[in-house]
Length: 149
Image 1 (spheres, rainbow, N blue to C red):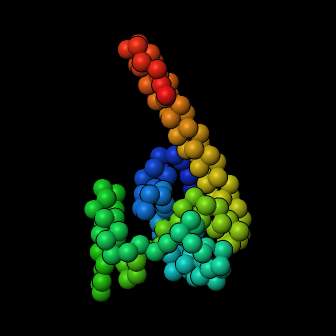
Image 2 (image 1 turned 90 degrees about the vertical axis):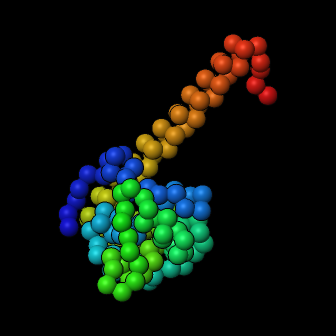
């Protein structure tokens, strides 16, 4: 596996929401960093203290795995002879940043930089959208003679 461009479109298709947090699957991150998922998980487990708490990483429960399998971009079957043998781990944005302290090599450095830039763009767009919504709500309320509290 080699370097490929991490675009906002690429990220959009690989961001999920679980437990109120935007997360990425271990398998998607392994692909980005050029690892087999098994070896990627091994790197994480060798540095597990860096990922303690749901703020960084957590394993999906059975219900979450089922919900994931219903997503339009993802098909997943659990059990013997299926797509996966183990429940996926998911990483929050903070967990992805922590991965950058664990994964080594030229590819990891390049992909980490690309991920940071993409997250930054996504966060800026999110804040901009929120600001525009607030401005529109204020204008609507003002035109109706109301004021925002």
